[in-house]
Length: 436
Image 1 (tube, rainbow, N blue to C red):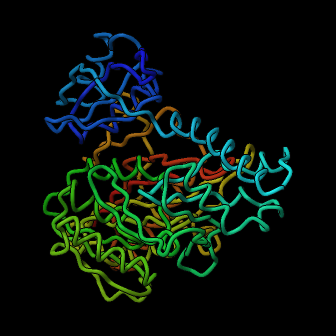
Image 2 (cartoon, rainbow, N blue to C red):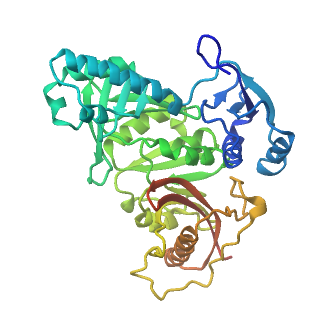
Image 3 (cartoon, helix red, strand yellow):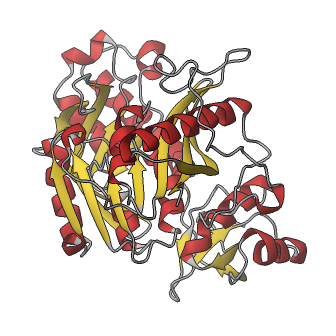
């Protein structure tokens, strides 16, 4: 309930260990129990509290969380005495404030306010400390051009920041450089904190996707103690850092060819205290001089990482193999079958060593990769067909690269986000082992 001063009162929350947060979140969202009006909070004892709707969380749901969703987890009901509003909740009032202040400023300069100008104001944005990143859809009307650059100081003041930038489309330069224009301020370096990990980067030079948070939380919950990981598309460390900081990977080979991303990655490894456990390979990973080292390979490139599959197969340990995390944008248009990976090269190719997908609803929700195949009942047929095609292609590549047959097994197909209408960003966890 809100207090008399207008600030939110205490809300009920369920607290658990950080490594189980994503499982809890998925369950609460599915049961329509997650309170999206408030942010998840880190408690003084190190647990993470997820706000829930209602006066309490029924006992049946608590048992489900500890017995099936996250066995071994601690499930404690608590209260957030000073809950922080979610970004969605916070954005409403600032948008109204922005409209009021910009309108007053525009009219004071003798410019008539119009419905066109009001519709052209931003309704959402990304905040990075004292810098606000606006979307490319706003401030497009020609009238704004006559009001720059003084306009941007008014916008920044209304939204409580010191710097402003505006996003454009990603440049087709091979390094996914964002077309970002700095509107106010003298540099674009910002810091963002995800799951206790600090990321510093220049918003005018590097991409940062908030939509990948679920996958970053998932890989952070994996048990990678003693493992060597190869991250073929490291960027500023989106997945390299969770693997090192939370998942406990012994060492990471991080591959990246964008010099601006590499500069940020070096900085991020240092500020998170894991630089001694990572080697950066700057340049095109297709000529990477590395083989027979990896227990795990991350292929975090969309729309497809297929060009990196041969390298991923080569760097896997020849004696024991490992696990591939393969990112892909999969089309799911009604009535359309997805194009199989490498279909132009393998229309009649078949590998007898691949395994079939087995749906196990009893284990739906597990985030580990202990050999159990985990497919949600909501897994789309297009995802499954793409995963089976990818598995077949990987099995063929492994035999070509290593000169002997390998066993492959689909462990999980994990949705990350909807990238566009009928296009889903998914991750395939594929286990690859040599036939001894």
